Length: 255
Image 1 (cartoon, rainbow, N blue to C red):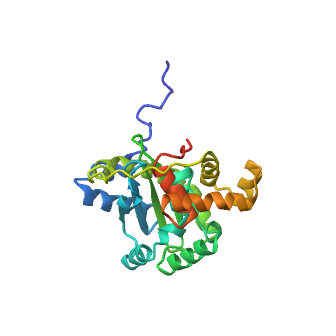
Image 2: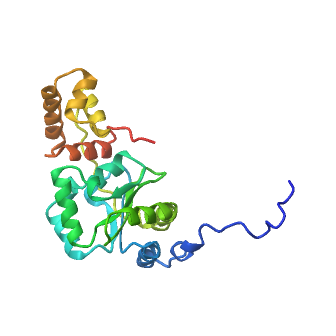
Image 3: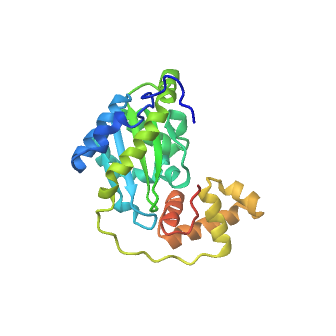
């Protein structure tokens, strides 16, 4: 093949901005270099979280962040994970979740966003992680800025670089994610065919009314099955049913 005139040596090195991260000496160094790379892209705070494989308990997540300590303590103490839309989203989607006030839809989610904003976590993006060995997680980059056209323009410009940063971060921290001792296996509940149907549509984000229309049953009937699912999984929230079902391999992940 003929060489394009003047093209020698012009092949871009897409990874050069992340050389420091890829060549980190150890885990703390890799985390610091990840945070530095995110700052170069205009983000103050970073959270990297990965569950080693879908059947691992979500409580055993590998998590590193430079979020304010008071916010992390408040989040964990009040189990705000149950209301956090980014958690369920990363289990069922591979596309970015953009942090804007309107992205937090329910009353609980809106309250979570308002509280996070008070700690300087106002706008950003969550990029889901899907590893080749079944890992599920997220890289979230957030900054203390105003939601609006300027942020969206900046995000549009940097989204490709952020996606590459997500992949490089996962490769660089992969060995540390898997260094944890595996937790004991959980019992898998026995579900009826109708409960499985409801579960699959719940994971797709459908409401009880929508599921009823799809399955040709009443909304009350759907809520009855969802209540049974909560009891069988030992959780109180609908989102936790989906998360636990995915972890136990009862729902097929998209993509």
